[in-house]
Image 1 (cartoon, rainbow, N blue to C red):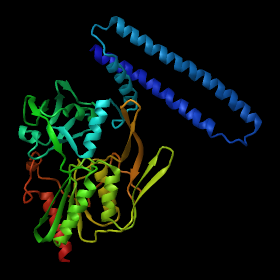
Image 2 (image 1 turned 180 degrees about the vertical axis):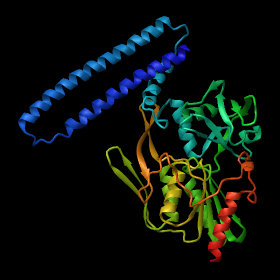
Image 3 (image 1 turned 90 degrees about the vertical axis):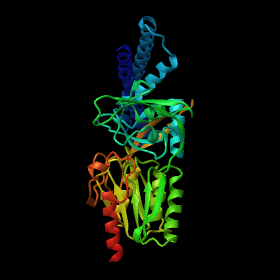
Image 4 (image 1 turned 30 degrees about the horizontal axis):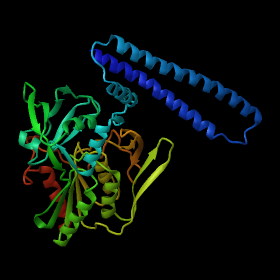
Length: 419
């Protein structure tokens, strides 16, 4: 209880610090942007007002620092447990970012930042499973254990709720922080408490950590020369893997292609842009806008373009970069989007490294499909809606013959090839 009280109190205090910083930033921006041609009377009033504002902010800043010192003294005097100063400082930094109320903005300790960089490279040491978080409830679930990975071998299933990691409840905590706790040195175990639908009691799993190479691309040639490429994440290695896959399928005479991005949580913006560059005609594929209205556009140069029948499979776990891919294909009318409405994450985060090996992640902009749609909180609606059969939703591996969503995409591509 004391830990929760102090954590909440520091979070609130950190929020005040953040508000002060924002106000000061706005003030500096306004002063630097003043037009030197303003009338002298206006300038004099502004100088007086800004001087007063500066004095008030300086007092406010001093009061905040005094209060932090007072809190630290009270904790040191009365709190019954030993306090690690570094942990206390990390709590203040995390509270500062948490005060934004944005589930995608957070502070990373040095260890957490290293784990984040590992995961985006496509190789890490962990249990071998993709996870997702409901931003409303904070609940974290297993999306898919990687076949033959530790999580798969231990018996984790899609839809399992991760309740505790190493004995600590994780619901509502930052997803990246939770993932970093699951990762660790090879040969050690991750202790997970799982809540599974249909089970009355939580289930305990002790899962060995191993070096995992994320299988971001899987592909094969289906019947009737229909190519199939599944993308699990958009990591650094994915664009090169995708190009090799599509070139191989082309060399084998593919007549149409299905790109499966179901359960793909997203990844790197540049990676999905590179893949869209391989698929779409020349033109805008996505753009972002920040709070100042500054716009950054990403284009396809049409040096390569996919001109055969195309279907894209999505579901409620297709998020972020996956939605950029599906949205661009849909806007250009270059393929049929099949499945269920996607997750609805239409915002972009930036990782900002700090001087001491730590980092922050902050939401910096919204992204828009080529036609100007921002789907944050809405998602991409498929052109043809197909719900996955209930009996398949907890299966780690679904036979392609049973996969009713995939079979619908095959039917669509087959009809287009024949016509």
